[in-house]
Length: 247
Image 1 (cartoon, helix red, strand yellow):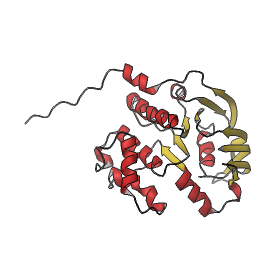
Image 2 (cartoon, helix red, strand yellow):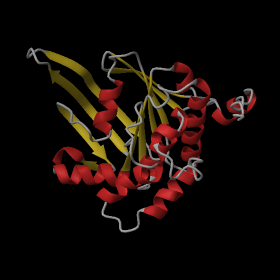
Image 3 (cartoon, helix red, strand yellow):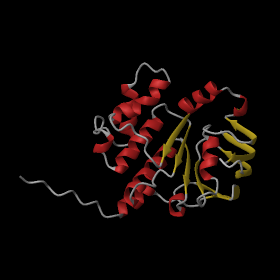
Image 4 (cartoon, helix red, strand yellow):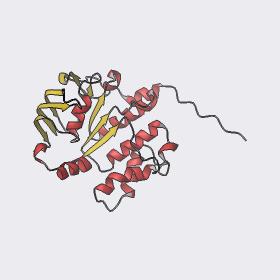
């Protein structure tokens, strides 16, 4: 699905100096993989994800998405691929605060000119366990629930690949495991997942780890026994119910 060859990325700063973010990266990702891209801050993880997700372009190198060289595509063609074939989940949930969960999930459908918005959005929210939170606003949801809404929004157009950039960074450990469990279930349904994280423990839930350092891939190895997030959740004590409010 994804083939990068000699990808190099250089940014110019406001002082007109150059910062090299990626150095001659070669990478292939097959459909149906679950990959974790790991590395310290500044290693090039997010830059790599942005290029693979067609949010940025390399300074040089070749990028084939499903055997199509994306550097030759127009801005409109790239936007169409992002909308219809790629889903994004970020550390910040990027939900519209005055818009319900259902309406937030409907947004990508609006840009894809779909006539039926409500039913696909309902299905996507049900898939992440929020069928009973359709009309709640982001401020009425926990952090984990807000990230589920963001995942549902990424899923609603039934993309081929989902890029998740530090998706558990704003969550506690239990809510983070719940999000990873959703990604693992999506991967079992043959969705391609690319998880960007600095968390080594989190990366062990993927099936393959790509390690970056100073803009270069220094490790590309399979995970022999990926951790099962659902099993880890089952072994934890159940969260305490909030106290009842009495009059």
